[in-house]
Every structure is written in C-alpha cells, then in structure tokens.
Length: 117
Image (cartoon, rainbow, N blue to C red; front, top):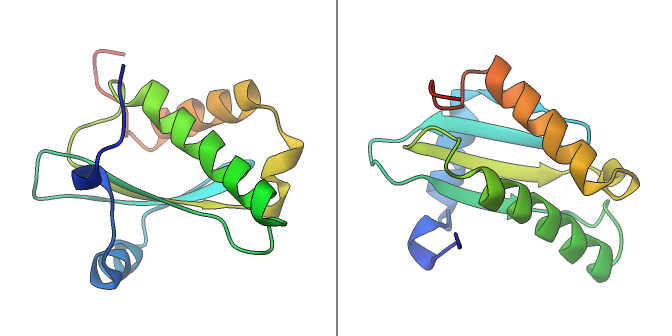
C-alpha cells in the first residue's frame, strides 16, 4: 500500500514559489496541477483547497480526492516530479473515476507517465 510520508510533502514557501516559477501547468476538470522536475529522485506533492471550494468538510474531501488520485497512480508517474495540486470549486461536482481518468489522460499528454505504460 502506497502512502504519503512527511518526506514526500512540499512544505516551504520557497519550494512552492520555485514550482510556480517553472510555469508547467496542467488544467484538469476538477483541479490544476503545477509541476517541475526535481533534482532528487523522490517525488514530492502538495494538495491545496482554498475557501472557494466550500466549507472545511468540502475542502478536506477535495484534498482526499486529489491525494487518492496520486496515491493510486504513483507508480505510473515519472520519478523526480514535484507537483502542486490546487482544487477548483467544481471538483465536488465530479466523481472520482472521472477525475482519475482525466488526470491520467492529461498526464500522458504532458509526458508525466512512465514510458512502460
């Protein structure tokens, strides 16, 4: 079972700003993904849901959806990617399978998936 440990999280503001500065962006139905290549082999992730998404329960649900999409597809994604997932207000309207399918489709277009898939 794959899980997110402390070392796999993006925490510092400077790290966020570094990823935003690369301007590599993927716009899915329910969320936006900013990404860049990392010098390290280990990928790092951050999940953000602003108050536009809804109340605290809605924001937590949105972050859980995004975390689960990444957790299930960790082995498919290229190693050494730092990714920030930002929930859109419409994320609650989509079901998990639709979000996951659209994420994989766009990840393949942006060449973020392993070549073996």
